[in-house]
Amino acid sequence: MDMKRNQLGTSDLSITPIGVGTWAIGGSGWAYAWGPQNDRESLAAIHRALDLGLNWIDTAPVYGLGHAEEIVGRAVRARSDRPLVFTKCTRLWDQAGNPYGNLKAASIRREVEDSLRRLQVEVIDLYQVHWPDPEEDIEECWSTMADLKAEGKVRFIGVSNFNVAQMRRAGALAPSTSLQPPYSLLNRDIEGEILGFCQQHRIGVLAYSPMMLGLLSGTMTRERVAAFPPDDFRRNHPQFQEPNLSRNLKLVELLRDIGSHHQASPAEVAIAWTLHHPAVTAAIVGVRHPAQVDGVIGAATLALSADELATIEDFFARGPDA
Image 1 (cartoon, rainbow, N blue to C red):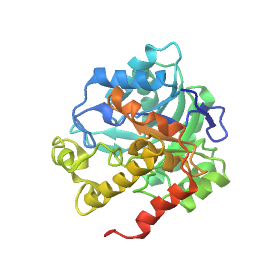
Image 2 (image 1 turned 90 degrees about the vertical axis):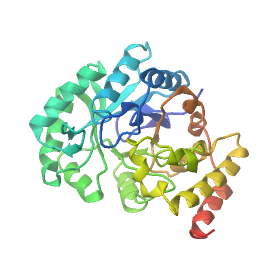
Image 3 (image 1 turned 45 degrees about the horizontal axis):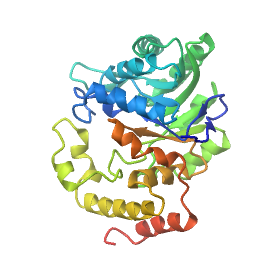
Image 4 (image 1 turned 135 degrees about the vertical axis):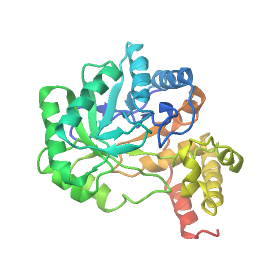
């Protein structure tokens, strides 16, 4: 598929409007798992996405406690057309699979070596601070990230889940190529101050969870939610519980109706809505098997009309009982 590419911040990274997300393919065994996952399907999904033209993958060590990075490494090694590989640091885990933060220099240096090994690459294209936790160590962390860039371990550095004050603290030491925040029709907290700051300072935005953890995919039903495996953390997420669930499924039907005019899925409409904001460079779209790729790839080229955008806004303006 022929799709445009966007410059990420002030870097020389030219990326497709959507990239491959790998949170779910980490599989079971940790606190924020999406339930069991078949590795063969994960590899097939990544290859399908790359075959259709996507040119970057986003992952993190904590996804499956290293497993997602290993899967990405296997997928990338098999390609002659190596995609850009983005990963993260500063989230470690205890023996029970519960993540915790560590922004210390020594920890980050251990993490980058572990990620390079699991990913089977010589350099990481974009290395991101996963969470600013603990906040008091932001300066030590960001100075170390800048050093890794200068040393050639990573090409560019970015942040994830930072607010404006935290981005200012980092920016006082070294520029940030990008911010990775959650952004979707059901999570618009970054509109205004955060996205405005990124535009002003030419910080690229990689929006994650544009389908709100799969809720806006068009394939979610009450029955599927009820049948989530015990270790799927979404079971306890407020957006998957009533009364939010019924309201959100109504929104999906609206997205389905809009999509019918474009031969597009609700997922593609939801992702395209996220991409329409001028501050957003690209969206991270998680896939677990090849068929899911076919249901989202059109978002990269889908442009919603002003009337369609207004119809979506009207849905929210009518309130929860609409």
